[in-house]
Length: 448
Ligand code: NAD
Image (tube, rainbow, N blue to C red):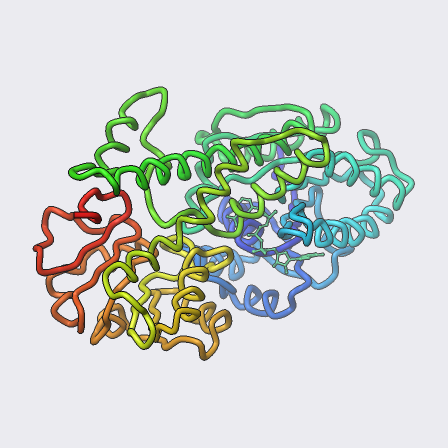
């Protein structure tokens, strides 16, 4: 590939916009398209519609040097580029399967542009989609355009593995690139694009069928979620065994090279915009094909109970929660993002409210999203200490760095009752005096 391909991206959310900004930062000409006009207006001014570390700086640069532009016209985006990445959402549908309506509408927009295009064009599905979807997408485009996939246009399935909160780095330094291809020319072209994008940092590249690429993404997420649910199950056991601590158990098993240390952090469970809906979608695929997926089922089941442990600890310490002031610290589904989709904080806050507690919440970045979700059901604090002041109980739900620097003894002094529930093992239990009622996931001491 002598020249960098011109790229259009359909869907400027966490995946599409971070990809657009990093491609533009490497000198690619990128045209972004989204149906959300508010997003387009912000991006045009170099502003990010959501919080992601480093994104706004890259965006401002990409927009001012002209490498990144946006359009409301999908046909124009297709006509003026060589390859289109589809990065629209694939949320959970009413039956648990992936809702592909955003994908279908993006494909129809793309198809109109493709029909008019004289030259070969590559379509890349980067959204997470169930096995078989990409091949059906190729058929839909063939029917719409009268063109043939593998001849007049190409199609690849190229799953994304980025972590929100680390998306820029993950775009620039992926562990691997998976390319599912409908034909060799499509795969070669996409491989060339990644070589031009990542240069010397090119990771292992896997070329495979469309279906394998689709499955790799689901299997990947199911395995990661299973590791977390596994250690949470062990954490529940640790809590009933004096002197046991899941942190040491996790460290011990993580040192086994066959297991590895990652995704063995016990806590209040996994959430977010991907794991919950992707595991449900995988179970749905299994049901449709008549195949049981018991490990995936158990992974989900363990996770459903885990967030409510925070409420159980609060009740163990305080009894009836009616009228009690409970501070919930950390609302985003993980640190360094404002994303609250599928966040465990939602389950915890709703349960506390249901039990009559007066809930006050704080998050360093997710307060605007929290206000949309909780409305006037809760109070909103200006800072962590503001939330904690006068509280009967403080529950740490997301492991933001700013919470890690709090001193538990000082926090306890501000509270009406010194009850601290450490849902993410932020604090070292060895440094906490017995004047504080400290509960932590996976700590035998909880039942002393
Ligand atoms: P998102 O909801 O943040 O963004 C999707 C964007 O697509 C929105 O801006 C929406 O307005 C836009 N859109 C919807 N319909 C459209 C259409 N017809 N044409 C153009 N734009 C349209 O979603 P996301 O988190 O970026 O995820 C996108 C996909 O990537 C999903 O399939 C997700 O499972 C997958 N994924 C997400 C992550 C992650 O961490 N967020 C990681 C890996 C994979």
